Amino acid sequence: MSRRTRERDPADLLDAARQGDRGSLARLITLVEEGGERARAVGRLTFPLAGNAYTAGITGPTGSGKSTLTERLISIIRGAGDEVGVLAVDPSSPFSGGAFLGDRVRMQQHATDEGVFIRSMATRGHLGGLALATPEAIRVLDAAGIPWVLVETVGVGQVEIEIAGSADTTVVVVPPGSGDAMQASKAGLLEAADIFVVNKADRPGAAETRRDLEFMLHLSASDLEWTPPIVMTVASTGDGIDDLWKTIADHRAFLAERGLLEKRRAQRLAEELRHVVSQRVEHLAYERCQGPDFDRLLNDVLERRLDPYAAAARLVDG
Ligand SMILES: Nc1nc2c(ncn2[C@@H]2O[C@H](COP(=O)(O)OP(=O)(O)OP(=O)(O)O)[C@@H](O)[C@H]2O)c(=O)[nH]1
Ligand SMILES: [Mg+2]
Image (tube, helix red, strand yellow):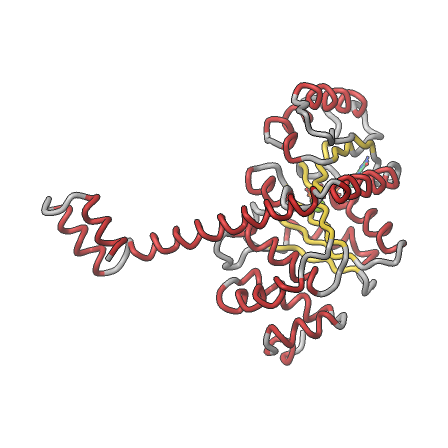
């Protein structure tokens, strides 16, 4: 990246990104990761332009084949002539690099394709971590005019599910093996999934995993009109990928036809707004709990001149 790119302001970067300059796009996402005033400036610029990209989240346990599947989906999207952005998010790792080296290598076949933008995400300073930085990064890609955004999230914890669930279509990848389907259900993936993929269907136990999933879906069946389909794939050979793509398209059509896409996106924005508010309040609490005022009031509490509630009231209300 040239010095000039680094020094350009967010508005110039966004203009360049919208003209297809990938370096500027990468820089904008770095600004989002770093948080602070420049990240806010990026958010202000991208938000009004966003809302057109369709996002698919791909989540599941480590090594289940998410990146290999993602790579196959990239090929299909490119085959249709569309541009695609990919964000690889690993909430458990504070810095991008090591863990994603493999992803980069595997997605190398797209490395020289200008229509593909692949990026791993780390939080360098964004308040609220990746759960808040990811939607902002998606909006950067969206505002740059990229119609498809795939978000690969590693892991099945609470934050991972939150990120994965912030897509229009959430794909949960379950590898074959006794207990894996059960683990997915415990982790709350059953609720988050719009589509299940049993990848590595060439391995023993795939049919059993499918049956386990069917059984659990049956148990948790509600009056929802959409029951998550289960797609069998062998990402390494490409088997079942067309089926997966068609299922994503079906889900998209289902949401669009019933007005559910807008409803979901509205719910997500409400959730994001709540999250930002609680981050800010938490940050405020952190700031109020240090410094001379805090020390003075704490001293009053320690000497029993003030009770903790009265001291807190003074710190919060001034
Ligand atoms: N046999 C078999 N191997 C597969 C299949 N899909 C992926 N693999 C292999 O499984 C390994 C892990 O695949 P990845 O795509 O990196 O899995 P991942 O879920 O992205 O892994 P993390 O990002 O580390 O969580 C690689 O060696 C793939 O070649 C499959 O369908 N069958
Ligand atoms: Mg991966």
